Length: 168
Image (cartoon, rainbow, N blue to C red; front, side, top):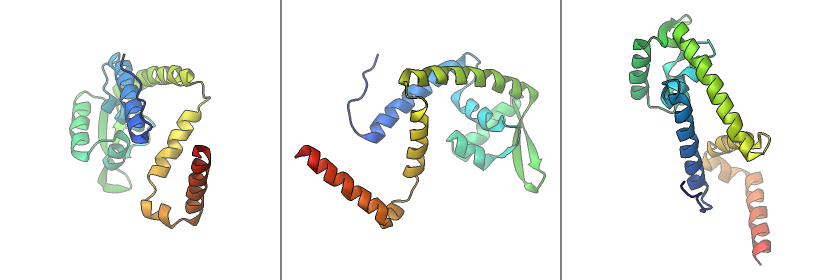
């Protein structure tokens, strides 16, 4: 078993965790002959609302050309189908087929159960997931907005002072 990284580098720690969690997810999904990328498509389209390709690409963390190829395969496998957007005929929305709904239901149960087991191992009562959501939002804040925020500057000054106090 590979060792846990000892680096305090946040990006490195997150990358390590992401790789292990995705590897675990892939193993769970393989039991249903589903890939992680297919699961990401199923998971967003599974709400029955129909979603445009750009939104799915963002959710699936895939470039649009790669997503188009994946969706073409999923259409051929009768998991999803494309429909024109009733409000904008230029757009196409993706929906699950009955076969896709069945696969989504089965995989969602497996994924939820495995993720619950994994989060139970952290014994944090769901705090990790909430913290990751906050971290994702904070990381999306442009650096110029952070530099211009006087409250952020004061918080940085407080952190620096605390760090100097504990190291001195």
